[in-house]
Length: 168
Image (cartoon, rainbow, N blue to C red):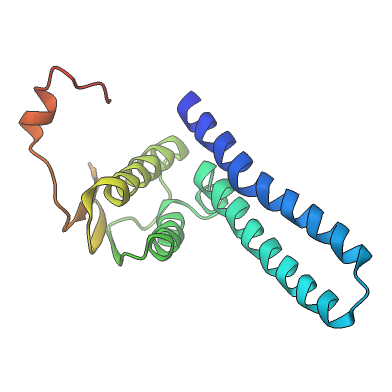
C-alpha cells in the first residue's frame, strides 16, 4: 500500500501538479495578452492541456479504485479496465469471461481485479508483448483468472532461485 501511495503521490506531483502550474502561468499570460489571435491560440492550448490533465487524474483514480467494480461488478469493471489499459499502452488485449453471471463477494471481486491489474501492469513493463489476453472462467466451485501475453517471458526457476531476488 505504501508503494502504491508513493507511486500515486509521484504521479500527482509530476503530471497533474506540473500541468496545473502550466495552466496557472498560461492563464496569467492570457490576462495580459492584447492580440485576439494570440488569445484564441493560447486558450486552445490551455484547453487541450486541461483535457489531458483531466484524463490523467481520471486514470489515476480508476487505478486506485474503479467505481464500476463497486457499482456494476467484476466483469463490467474488467471490460472497462482492459479497454482503457489497452488503449493507454497500445497493445491489443482480449478479455474472455465465462460462467460469471452474477456478482461475487466484494472482497473476491476486488482481489481478482487487483491480481489481473497487476498481471497486466507487469506485462506492460517487462514482457515486450505485442498482444495479451485475460480470461476469467468460473463454475460452481472455482474461479480461474489468467493473464497471458506473447512477450519474452522469464525462467521461473532462475527467478525464484536467485540469491539477489528482492521482489515479491
